[in-house]
Amino acid sequence: QVQLVESGGGEVQAGGSLRLSCAPSGRTFSSYAMGWFRQAPGKEREFVAAISRSGLSTYSADSVKGRFTISRDNAKNTVSLQMNSLKPEDTAVYYCAARSSVSGYYVRQTDYAYWGQGTQVTVSS
Image (tube, rainbow, N blue to C red; front, side, top):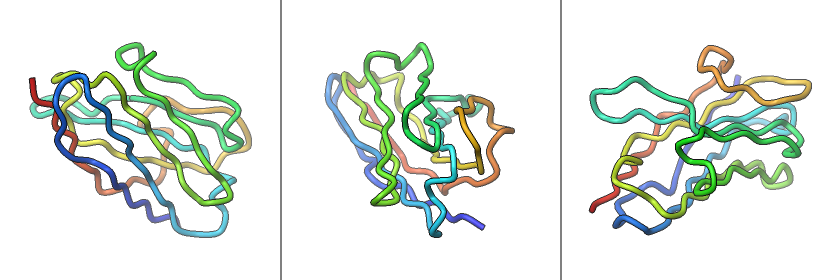
């Protein structure tokens, strides 16, 4: 069982930056592929970024490519999402997700077994 706790959300003006962190419980963090998803008001939850268990492979949605960076520190049991050049349309609840993995990253919500409670990101214009 993995419990995920996100932090780092908040309100920022357009063009600003935020860094989200996710701290999974357990001692097998390095065996999990991780992902970030978001859900805006009135919309379905969507994929943002994913990273393999080693951290060597990452993938981001086109809507955030070049602005958001996913990374992980297996020694510190942390996965992060650095968000730069934020836009009002980035406003959403952001969720961290995890799944046991041998290699690769995953982009579908159904690929993930564990989810955090979400953290709100609000970007004002």
